Image 1 (cartoon, rainbow, N blue to C red):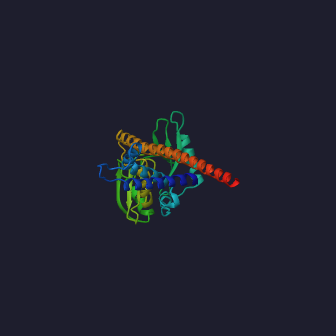
Image 2: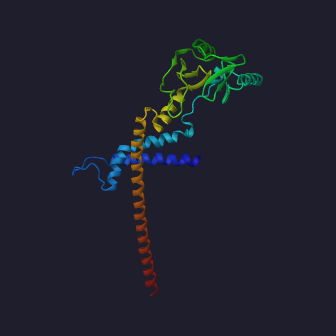
Image 3: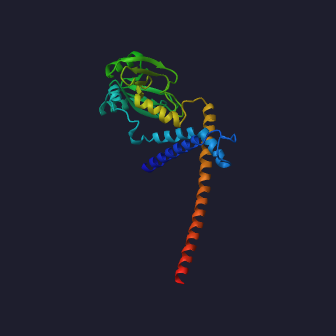
Length: 290
């Protein structure tokens, strides 16, 4: 992990220095040209100016996905635990037995997981056809009502509710992109110093997401820049991603080829220089022997 972090940090440094050199050398000259370079160097300069910023955002966001030096660490809190509460093993065994009895032949369960909200334990089953059902020891139950969700939040959260609604389409912090998400969900925005957002799935009684200030910043710095999920419409995203990746590949490819050529030239000059120095030393030794 440390090696990846160092390598990515080096990539950020090289991209920044490359942008600085490219911008500083760009300008109209007496001959009418905007770049002092020719050939492959010219194309690397121009393409780098166009796609260099995207290269930087991609490398920088890749670095931030590893949360270097704790830059995107938030303030720890117990909000999720306060909203969910706890349950005992005896309650869990009773629920498992109830679900197992109800899922007799013809009503199979492909997946069972626990969900606790407001201190009440329930089980969430997913059938072979993807049908989701929430259970308590009393049997299957209906999705949570808005009043029940508000009551738990008002009782357990440390700040009052500023906004509460049933979300049926994506917002900036709860959306499905490459991973599907549950719909609809209740969204509550608290009146705290971070404007914390809570997303609760009424079908499963699960707190599916909590978006505080640090997680919202992470959403833009990591996902927004690296995955480009600010544009989620397909195939628009695919076309944009292919275009940017092609440009970044050209910048990196031409830069790598130029560095290889420059290294070969420097090694050749070094070899000739060493040969010349060796010849001079041999000549000097011969003269001294005479």
